Each structure stands twice: as structure tokens, then as C-alpha cells.
Length: 278
Image 1: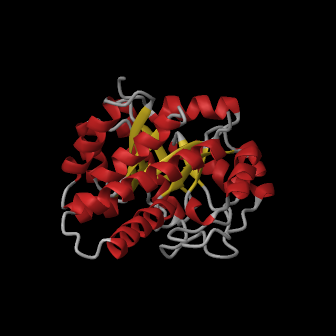
Image 2: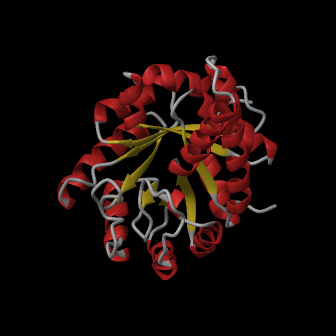
Image 3: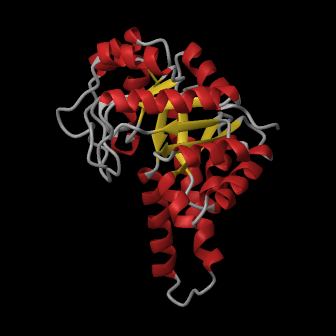
């Protein structure tokens, strides 16, 4: 199946009132597992490559080309997306490699500088037909706006979208990055007000900290794209630990990476049915 643009996957979900799962790729096994899990439940999915993962691999190209190859061989719609890029140069590289969407994060800058930097990236990406997600205020867990009490203002969100031309907006509604417990409390009323305020899809970062019922409620309130990373990493690491505990003499990484990959696929399949019930 040809690579599917993020724009198409998200637009269809928003029109249907369902959610899209966007899962972070750390290495090849993650990408394989995410696509396998999505195929098991026949749902579209987004593979995300963060700037942190690029630093881990030392370059974008190896992990991006591997993810693109896996996406193109899938039997379900799969998009490949650059997540949390703070460097415009990395955005340009992603566009050149064939990624169809990027998340540009200038949220650490003052508002006016965030607008200016994001608008410049949007204009450049749109010339190449690439979809852009922006962020208003920092997403928490990384020193930012999803810390307790910090929320996205609907009026400011409306102005930000109009000024930058972003195609989607990451908002602060109560979740936080890198949570290992699923007890975040989302402000559903705020999600509904943000949905009414802007005419682009809303994106929930830090979704690993949100329970299944919380995710379903967020979608019902107006959220569309849901980003998950830490929750999958927990499943991956738990499976590795279990295998090594049961097989203390194991030395072949494939012996413990295979069950870890299967565990991630199972979690992806489950979460996708929560976000987009049959």
C-alpha cells in the first residue's frame, strides 16, 4: 500500500469523530510492532520519530528510511511523522527524505517568536505539500505547559492557528509527557471549547498517562490525534525483563526483542480500538 499522508488519516478520523493513534518509533522493532498491531485491528496509524530518537541514532535518515519502508509495505494506511522537532533544519531534512508531516515545536520561545518561527516552517512545508502540527505552550514532562494547572487558552489558540497556518495544534489539557502511571485527569470541558475555537485537529501529547476511559472521553470531547510513547516502552521493557528472568543464559538479542515487539503490537492494537471503536 502506498504511504498515506497524516493529513488524510487525521482528516478522516476527525470527520468520523474518532481518534488516530500516533506512536513513537525508537528503533526498528517499534516500527514493526506498531504496524503489526494496527494491521491486527485494521486501523490506520502514524509512526512518529522524535528529535530525541534522532539524537539516539545519530541521524534522522536511518530510522526515517526504515520507518518509511515498513509503512510502504503495510496492508493498512500508515503515515510517518517527525515529532517534536525544534530545529528547522531537521524539518527540512525530514521533508527531503519523504516524511509527509512534521510537528514543529517552538513552544519554548516567547509567543511572538513562536508564531514567527512556526509560520516560517509552515510556509516552507506547505510549498512541499507537508502537513504541520504546531504547539502553543510547552507540553509537560519537559519543563512545560502540561504541568499541573497549565492549560491552553482557546482565544490564544484561535489566534495562533490563524497567525501560523498550522494544520493541527498540540494543546495543554492535563496530560504530561513521560508518565508511567495512567492517572492524568484531562479537562474535557476545555477540550470541547478548544475544538469549537479552532478549525484544525487537536493533538493530545503525553497520552501514556491517560486511562482508556480518559482517552475515549477526550476523543468524544473533540481530540483527534493521540500521541503515545512511554506506555509502549513500558510494555517493551517489561517483556524483555520477563524473558531474561526466565532465560538467564540468553545472549541472542532476537530472543528477547521478539517478545518485546509482540507486547508492543498487542498494546497498539488495544489502544487503537479504544481511540476508534468498531
